[in-house]
Structure formats: structure tokens, C-alpha cells
Length: 371
Image 1: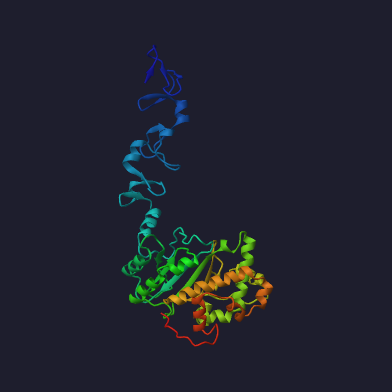
Image 2: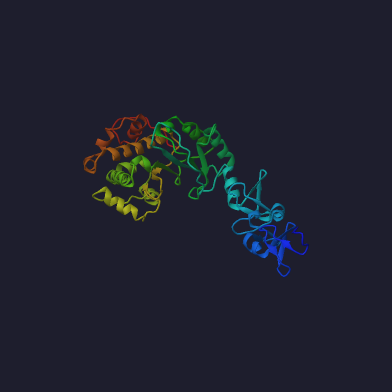
């Protein structure tokens, strides 16, 4: 409290104004404060009712707290900094979390994530602007954390390259999801060892009625602008419809399975007309080429596999379709037969696979069993 030489005269400790005997005042931390400063510069703790300086509030936009109440009854989320009452905080490894961040943090440490889990992508392969993200479904040996740990140990020995999710479309299995990788990076990656481990654990992919192989490609590699990207996408859609019978054979799916999980948009005279149909979204994401993702297009037409040659050949086919869509005009695509297309191919895994499926030339070749 501040007083002048006249003991009956009080001064506001904040603004210095004289407080007359008939005026009200408040005492904050032992200091006399006039009512005008109380109204302008103070607030009230929502928990205990104490008057505190506005700048000394430890709360947020919705809750005002004095220091004592905050320290004794509240904390903050170590991830998003949200204010939390101690009864609402979740604790993990010495840190406090809100409910949303706690679920995210726990999910990060799971071997098998929920279906909606989607971490920030990590791109592998600096020599390319085209990246392929893979979703490979395997079934038959359980949604088992120990199995998932064994697969993850092979793939993520130094940093996260894949993660594993549950999928309600599978009877008793897992979905292996890769971070985006260039084509060459995929070819050098641990896919063979991952597949061998999955087979050893009892999983199958081709030999099920449930599993698919989906390949995402970043839209940015199709053009610098949205118009450029859509032109290339229209070429892709035209190619898929123009060569549907060959791609159906390549996919190893039945027509019933394709219609259920990766339906065609339907043939039209131009790619633009097919793109217009696709934009209406009647197929949802269950389209042969799914366009519902903002950053990628997704080739969904392929049946799952645990055979390395088939996996690599699928990457190479998707890459070849994109190269064709980028480098040929629509008129040239109209004139291009499947034979014309395969004669442009140089990738050995893809050519071998096409021979196996009798989609290249009628040449005898030993066929390995699909898993």
C-alpha cells in the first residue's frame, strides 16, 4: 500500500491517482488499485475468484487462471500446448497430453495403426521427381503385432520406410504401406525380404479373395499447373480404357473383383470426356484410377502379390503408362495398339511379367507361382 504524507490519502499503485475516502478500491498482491485500473487491467481467476493482473493470467482464451490455481490444478499438452485440467490430462513417459495428441502419440508407437492413420510422408530417392507409394494387403496369418514387428524390423532398420495398418476389408491380415519412393529406390528396397518374411509367417496376397495392390503417384510429376496435370490424367484415363482388356489380364483380378474394388469409368471418345465422368465421383475411391486424393492419383486395379517380379513389374507398368501419357498426344494414343505400347518397353521385370501373362509375345517362359 502506498500513502502520502497525509495518512488519510491513498494512491493507486498502478496509475498513481489519488483515491478519495469515498472511492472503492481493490488490493492485489498487497497493493492498492483504483477501480478504474481494476476494470481496465485486471481479470478474475475462473477457479478461485481472485483478482489478478490480466497479463499475469496463466489460462487461455477460454479460461482465466491465477498462478496458484494453474500450478496446482492445471497443466498443458506437451504436443499442442492446450490448457488441461489435471483430471483431463493423459500421461505417457513423463509427458502430459490432451486426448487427441495422446491417441496420436500412442498410435505412433503401435506396430499396427488404425486404418485412418496417415503420417507425414517421407520421400526416398533424390534423383527423381516421381514417387510411388504402395499399399500392399496381406491376409491369412492374423492382425498380429508380433508379425508386424518382424516385418517392420526388416524394412525400418535405420529409419521408417514402411508402416502397417489394419484394414476392415481383410479377413485376418495387414496392410503394408510404404512412404513415397522413386522407382529405382523401390527396386533397391527390401521388398524381397519383406515378402519372404510375410510368406514364412503364413500370409498370402494373390492367393486370397481380399487383397489388393495399390500404387500412388504424386500429381506434381504430371505437370507444373493443374491444367497440365489434368491433361496428363486424361491421357492416363484414356489409356486405361483403351487397353482395358490387357490391363485386366495384367491385374490378375476377375471382372467381378475389378468392378467391386477398382471399377472402370467407361470408354469415351476422348480422355477429357472420361475425366469429366471421373470428376463426378460416382465410383468413389473404388475406381481403377482413383482421383479423390489431393496430392496423388492411385492405381487400384492390381491384385495383391508376394512375388517380387510381379511387384516390380507393376511399378514399371504404372511408370510406363505415365511416360506414355506425358509424351504422346491424344491423337497418338488413339492410334496406339497394345503391341505398339509394349514395343516401347525396356524394363526387364515388366517384359518378363508380360511374357508370363501372354501379353508380350508368344514365347514360352517358366512361370513362378503367385503368392
